[in-house]
Length: 405
Image (cartoon, rainbow, N blue to C red; front, side, top):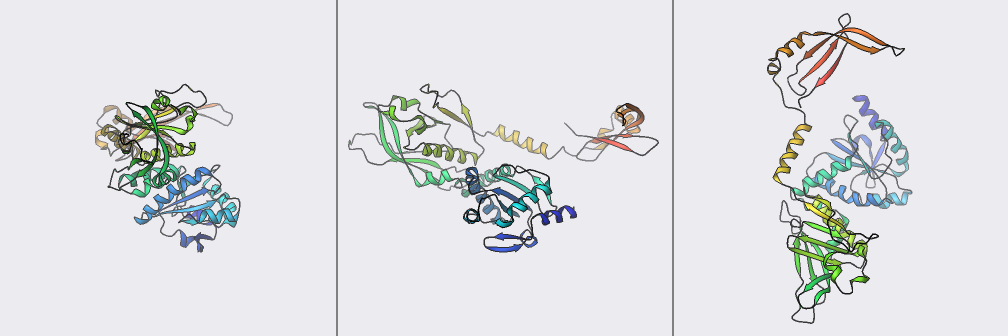
């Protein structure tokens, strides 16, 4: 273990950065329980989406003094790119001049390959061992846990949520019993009031220019995201019935439903439509509700721009119980009393040993038989015991661990 830890420390070089300060490696990682080595780059679009999410989790974990530290290992193409990107990060970094060498040294030490960015390796720096190669998934788990305990930073970490929070211009489709379907210019926002645990915020919209007709329907409204049951991207439903909607591209259109309430419209830029979807998806991901593709969404039959619909699968007490059981199984089986295991007549015989013939291949790949004894040995906890093959003339043995099912 000491060799592994010292080898890992050596792989990190001599100094690391924290902001503009240069710190010896040993001092930089002292007291750190989990070190995330973050392979990323400023030119990588997925990295730019993941970095704010990682930052929100990192800051929350730092506040709680959970012993999490992040080390940025850059794959930027220049010192200028590194300086600009690292300037947005609050954690440690490998100096850009050493990044390529240390990048290779880390992969060699852990005997793993990092082919894509973003990649996050979770390390135990005290032991110098790799805990988890898919660290991004663990960060998402942390984020969900923090958000469900009322940490609003996690909900606001996504770029699309921040943009929607500022307000985005949209054209909404409103059904009027006299005039039919009307198009009305409005502004839509994401509002998070921070009411504590479980608050996912809401979509709020209001008309930009009040209709001159005093009898016109007021289109202002709001939709809590914990009530949303479906979202679709594309030209469908009420939008197909609107006069003048033919000139609008399917990639600009959306609809969101929450029970009997529905909201449909289009943005001037397809990227804004994509942003609305990403914002809703992120907020739901910060809870336990999931988006599942719904193939029953009605559309105009377009092949080039089909409507893509999703329904929200709400977390239920039954699913909570299944999750609890799954986590219990991950921890291993409960303790077992060896006396209960040995009550069986056959097991008692097996503890004394049964004569068996063991067959192996020699150097010429020819089968070779050996007389062996098969013995069962019980354990107090964890595994329920071992089957051990013992060769009488020599004290060599091979074991097979048994677990409860």
